[in-house]
Length: 274
Image (cartoon, rainbow, N blue to C red; front, top):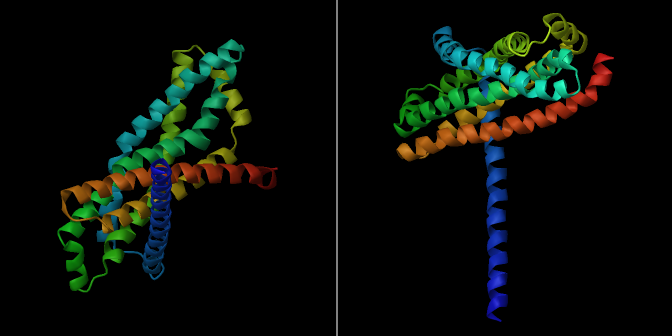
């Protein structure tokens, strides 16, 4: 009898925690949607002033270039190393450029660039806005008659929306060059065949697919980071947790968006490109 009651209690506890998780997820998704709609209502009337937008674009775009270039460079070389061993077993080393460049442009370039930017840009935005929430600077803006969403969120969203695809192009470009350099100078792949096969199999659709994904990634990073910062709890622990949640949530959403868009673009390829 006691064992039966204990088992029933454990089942109820599991159901209780499961219900809490579902309700929390639905609440968070709804709150994030409303936050995004509220932000969009301030974008439609007009863009923010230059003295507000340009410093944010500098922080997000220019200062992110070093980490993006380093990331793209290592992605290209890592792909070359990993693919060469398999291609060498089939005596197809000359085809190495195809798999490196297709994988880089369609998947790893946009995804890893977005993950790096979620860590650098997303966490920083969440920490900045969380600190402003804790120190009541956001409340002070409201008291002065300024809308904090229009003044703080919209410039960060526009900067991520516009610059993360551009940063992804930089990562793709340096990744293609580093993959070519490592393949030809270290792995002794013939440069002519490397580019010849890349030209045959790498299409504009692959590049456009990666850029489209990066637009969605930038949107997700900015929305999630600003939302977590705006809803930061009090204290240093709350700000740190907001920055952590911004990165973790962004990472999960990036993977989900990558899967959905990858499947959708695969299905649309015969319709749009042939």
